[in-house]
Length: 356
Image (cartoon, rainbow, N blue to C red; front, side, top):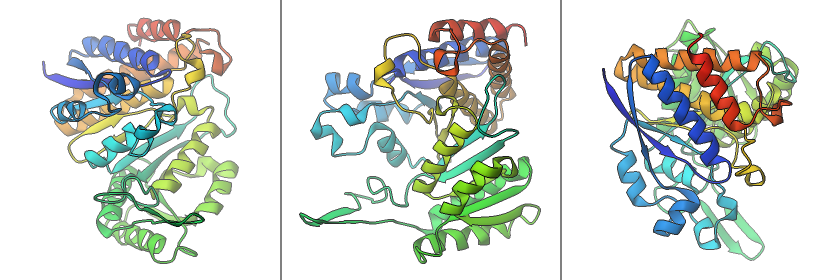
């Protein structure tokens, strides 16, 4: 039996509750799938500020580098003291530090959940290191300058290397799915930067002749998703557009609280739900853990492919089936019009692991 060490960064707000749910469910599923997973708890956010004076201390990063991957709870960086808000937030720091260039965000209709759209099953590939996110698109410093009290310049960065690698990730996924990729850009206005993104994606597309390709401007794409989300398969886009579109698609299929994501490099992966820390719900045992549970399933799938270990994929499949059965049975948290607490929902998923 292979052993995998995964980090557990519990985070802020509802983070400790939902991350614990994911850890407990992964532990139960791994035992059934006969794969050994050891969790290493590491400080981040408010816990790390109090202990180390840094929301993402070097000690945490040094340990993560030695692990197979990790689960990251949400952070409440907007509430950190001012001196900690001037740098990258914990999530942005890890994406930058470990070059987690691929942010994969699926959106699909789930059992027992009524969405704004139906019959939708798509995946957004968001380039995670460049674009207009100025806190992480530079080697050192940030890509923003305040020229005068009334003038600010913000820089977007687009490189062939970054676009090529996210495009290949998207097309490789499309080959395994419905063989369709949609490139989202704004090349009609941001002609050089967004134009480079579009053109390099099209160059990569030529290497995957079996995949159908189309492209849309970002503004038109938002309308298309609301009107006909079911027509899309794999979407590839830059950092900011991907962030916006994935929040939109999460809500369209039911709730941002259900939206999973995974951030990957060629060597490491971080599971992280797309939603925030919801500090107003913290400590009340009412938070919805579905997003981070599904993110953890994505992590297991990624590890399975990387290490050629089917037991990890089996564990992920068990969790998915148990989770969907739980929701089909009407066991849901309050935000989904259910009555279950976080702990009750978690216990129901674990109980269903033995029945799928």
